[in-house]
Length: 215
Image 1 (spheres, helix red, strand yellow):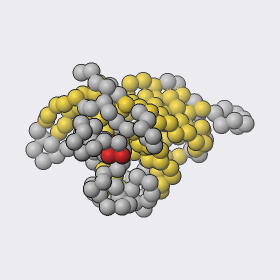
Image 2 (cartoon, rainbow, N blue to C red; image 1 turned 90 degrees about the vertical axis):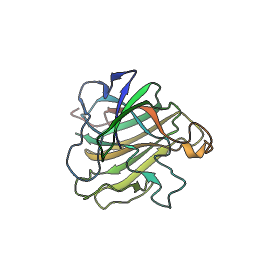
Image 3 (cartoon, one colour; image 1 turned 135 degrees about the vertical axis):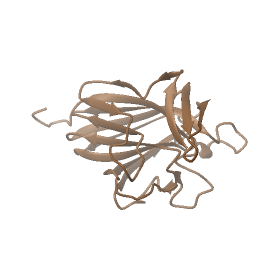
Image 4 (spheres, rainbow, N blue to C red; image 1 turned 120 degrees about the vertical axis):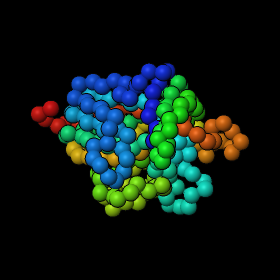
């Protein structure tokens, strides 16, 4: 089922952007990974998005290694950096995310408020994928799984944190960011936080690389 997130009953697809930032709730290309978001950032600025993602999106115990992530229940961001920058990605729990789901086969719509108990995780890959014929049901959140994108890094709630931050110097280019959860590390199967979608807020911030001239 495809999901469309709103918050507190009001559409909040791109909560805010600052100078040198562009956010679209759209896939940049047909085919391949079904990106929920496209974010473009210049040499400084930030962008925030709100959505919902599977609590077990980055770690499903029932799956076999190494493809332990859910492709369909997580959110994919097609990120483009226009120049070399210091990139910081922060993902936190978000309450009040209201999602509409559309059944892929029948087109029937349903509505629900997502949970607010996400233990967040992100995976970063080099490149965008637009050539894979069909988005698979599982993926590797800590390694390579498609030839079109290359694994770069991952960050997740290692000690039960509700907010995670990843920061690195990044060259200009296109990157695929997956936003998911590792709730199965902390929640028993009988717990409310074990299953379902949970709200998140993600902030992408870029700043100058120290020592670079002409910015």
